[in-house]
Length: 225
Length: 378
Image 1 (cartoon, chains in turn green, yellow):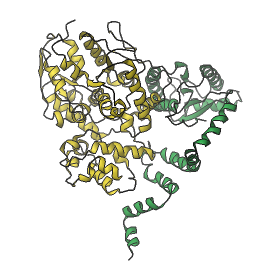
Image 2 (tube, chains in turn purple, red):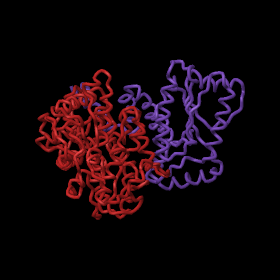
Image 3 (tube, one colour):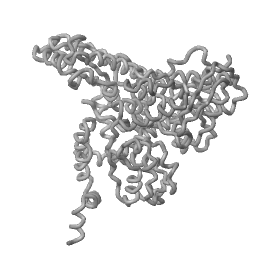
Image 4 (cartoon, chains in turn cyan, green):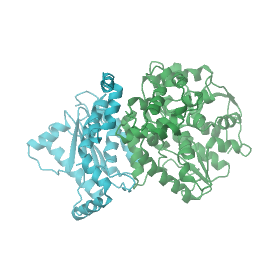
């Protein structure tokens, strides 16, 4: 029996040994196994593996601050065309289907949004919206079934309550009210979906980029798009 | 890791297990052991500790620090370990979906004009920019907006505090540009955003020309006193809790009896164990005529925590602790449970919402300032 074999017999020393010898990439790969325990943490493995995949490029940027200079120049060229980035939360049964209707009916609308489907608008708690703003969204649209139409009977009433809270928080933070909107859109209202999106996108475009100043101490937020 | 073990005195641990025995969340049934982290820090050697989820279970209430015979600073150890965890991409399972952390990070970014002072009424005399006394409001308005279902009214305490300062002839600075002190981000391990907030806040107070900073929030107080200390070096800014400030000026404060009431006091962990401030709130409450003071069995350094200090943990064990504490408060026969930290109010009010226990644990909760202001002669 060699000491290494003994080491392999118990999990603890082996783990520690491998962490010491393996490089960053290997440790990154191990992360999903240690997290990913509950539903709240379910999103983490993806983020972790993403970070692991991005690591080489991130390292280069860290090593050479000079590398940042061309990166800063790049948006300067493309800057004149700022386009809003909007996050749309849509419930599975009405609003998401409404968006589908708009697509199937080939109704044209502005493409500046990313849609996040949830099973019910009642799921959309203030944290979701605040997180979207934190990550750099210029506008957030929350949508669900009309009152009385909720697939889960009263989920949208809960959504309205939660939205009230969200609105107050957003107001306190000094984010313009026009960046946040609640709309009830049914599965049949494809045209209305397109209209709401167009209106809201124009409104956010007029307001301009989200006003958070990105001081150099804070890392640049990930692009929502 | 060697430094960590040295700085927090973890090396001195002789494995007696008192920390785990004292830990209130462990006593409530959680499978959690502070000793394990001390051991891990000691065994860690030069390697990085790979933190697990149990790190966020710690309430950072500092109870174990009180009892540790080897004077291991476990609370500081957890703070540092959480930083390591955060840097490695671990995030605590934040209650409330991490909404409050998002709010703090947005404040750290800055750039927006917060609507902080909507509560200021005409009868309150404040200055938005300059003055000798800076009244630090903390995030009271955010809590009120976020917890309407618990009938949380932290702002009532804030208003009362300003009124009391006015009655002492002080026109405090209440700034619209204040940002969260970053307490919870720091305790969640997010040092980067905490530093940004700290820098902004310290500059704001320095520019106001204030020599005293008064706050009603025990967590803000801890952050200003201990965690901002390196930034405040070279200034003569004095940081104190409202109850300390009022207790010093008791002779100027004109109080008259406002009915007979029996009250009890919940020591916030930040005010008590973290900063050793036990007497000023009691002196202040004793000075209010018509108030009978009833102490709970576990008080002062032994007081239990509200079990939700850093927005990083909430579970059935936390709930159990809160319910037990509320029963203890009820057993004193007091009508009102007074505290000096917004979070104690939020968490106990949440526990009181339990429909199965309802009346058994219901007790009125107030901030110290609210109780004193009622007895104030205009």
